[in-house]
Image (tube, rainbow, N blue to C red; front, top):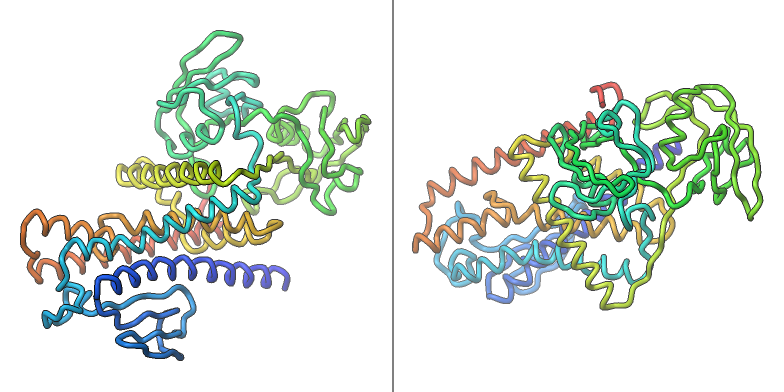
Length: 450
């Protein structure tokens, strides 16, 4: 029952977030169309059968049966519709006006993302402490490309691909988008730079690239103690700084995971610092389900992800938000480019299940800012994806308008019909593929994850 309630809560949260994003998108089209005098026949909250509403002027404002998103229907918007040549029809307006109407929806999504991020940065932005500053390596997983290349804890990454002096966020993005592709690193060790080419291996549910090295944490602090697990039973608490495990320093959580993989069910001696006092704990690991879901391994139920919190003045928040929009847009386009080149798997694209999982996780965190941050990412993705030059999408409408402007005439109706039919088939196949991969990534046992 608790799991069912959690699923229902996630579905509700996803419906609210996605519905709001789509409504904002459609409002952009609506406002631009009304401004230019295009007749808007329907503005609907939801899809399907009309439940209730009212008519004002030429527009039917309605609430429909399926409460996810909404749509705007403009007179003569579909090239296959019968045209009368009236000024109120979409296709009767100049191309530059149709261009603005088409781009207004994605623009509203980008503007919403910008506004949400600005608010989050001003109120409460919490992020992993390890992503800032120089990229010092805290641990190298045995048997990985980084370990095989001789990279060691304490080394610093001073260049990855074309990025000099990267932080860990930049390194992680480069790795994730380069599975099975050579990636050049410059590694600094004791004043000497070495040049290394590593091939990230596809890992996890999204088959993202990973070379097997993790950041050096400023301090290994327990930020999560799982109820009923050995760490809690031994007396460890959130906020304890883990100094040593079996007499060895622990530079990162992955180092403890590696220790557990070797020692298995042997008791661990953990020395921790609490309120300036050194305490020693005897912890008995247990075989338990870890990540990915269903994988059994020895665990003690302790997590570590030290975070920082910032509250920026308005202008700094605006600058940070603009940078976030540019960064995330670039990552989306880079992912799409590599997908077209068959360099990354379509598994890196999340569908409704993946999006719902992200929204649900953010909604369960303390406060509103995590959900607002994730909502900004979704809104930006929706805006950028709608600008792709695929007919039916806004970007396809814009592309056809540009082609017609160069031709100085309208594309013939039969050709437009074939273009839209082909685009529709492509989008349906793409959606089916993404949803299928979503299911495969979610349900254990359907496919083998690395």
